[in-house]
Amino acid sequence: MSEISINKNFIGPRAIFDNDFIPPKVLYREKEIKELHSLLEDSLRDHFSMNILYQGIEGIGKKVMINKAITDLSKKEYIFNDIRTIKVDCQGKSIEELLITIITKIFNLVDFQFDLKNLWNLKIHDLWNFFKLACKKFKINYLFFFTNVEHSIPEFYKKILQYGKDSHYNMISTINTALSPSFIEFFNSFDLQIKLKFYEYNELYEILKQRALLTFGKHIDNELIQFITDLIFEHHVPVPGKGINILKILYPTLVKDFNLGLSEIYNLIGNHFGLLQNWDEFEILDYLSNSGILATLFLDNLTSYFLNSTKYYINNYELRELYFLACESIEQEKFIDEYYSLLNDLYKIGILTLSYKNKFNNMPLNIEFLRENDLFFLSISPYNLKLAIDSLFNF
Image 1 (cartoon, rainbow, N blue to C red):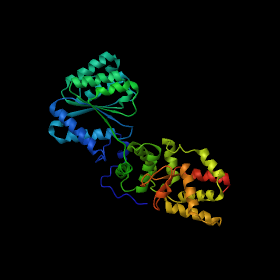
Image 2: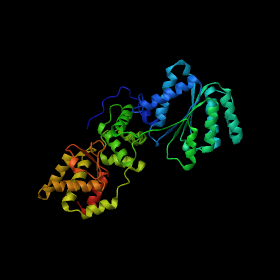
Image 3: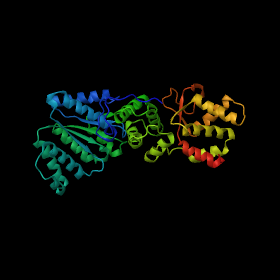
Image 4: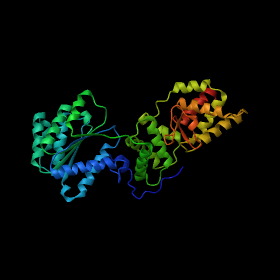
């Protein structure tokens, strides 16, 4: 396993635990950042407002991208130095709480002397008037940034959008999930709707490697980041947020020990994310109980390979050597077709998975295109698999 080179921009744990952290460079979103930067710049120069919606699954990087564009804009020219961003998370907030949050953030920005506790005694109508008063009283370039707007009430949020339009405030919103029917018409309230694309394997890998470098410096392995990327592709959807959450869980262990075994990795992350719960335990037990001795020995050799090392992958050549070893232990002749049949069985029932880094990642496994150095990984903890083998066959 090769170690990631030393990182001169080492940040520390803030790089993964700070939800508002912006990396020095936001990878593979340069085009989107440039477009948003240009839209906001034109809007501020020409004094017209924009309502922009970004849609994408949670963890795809909407907030990081938007924060980067806003930060870059505020630093670009002195005329934009007075931009004040009001960031509000709509999740878990009633209409009253949403309005109180907005009003409080505006007053905190301008240091207005008012006992904000009194806001909790006001009704929605009075809070709305207070919100409008706050916006009109202070002549500052406000930029409203609302996240998780799928949790808001569409009719009320449309009212906020319209007021922003009438008052020439720019408003950026993000939405995570598929919309309910009540939100379909809601889309028409935005001037621009942008859906962020998923990442390719190498893109997601580079993003997670960047965060690992910023967090741990040089003390982390490339293969571990590749493995985390594979787990995300296999069990989730390709978004950085899931990988960053995995790094958070691994952080207390990684800062002390950078040679984590596969079983330890699975033990740490399996309970938190359910990443490893989609394998069929009964199907695997059925396969073990009905397989011949050669298949069992081959699988036992495979689990031992991972239990006795800190490797996360095994290539086609190494797998074939484990098959040969199983054949020799029972003095059976070696057949390459038999090896590929065993390999295909383990692939179909979900014990072995072909790395998404490989050029060909097909289902079912395409033996014709398989190369010597193509990588596989265990989709099940080798420790749990070893227990299953031992319990059935008393190894």
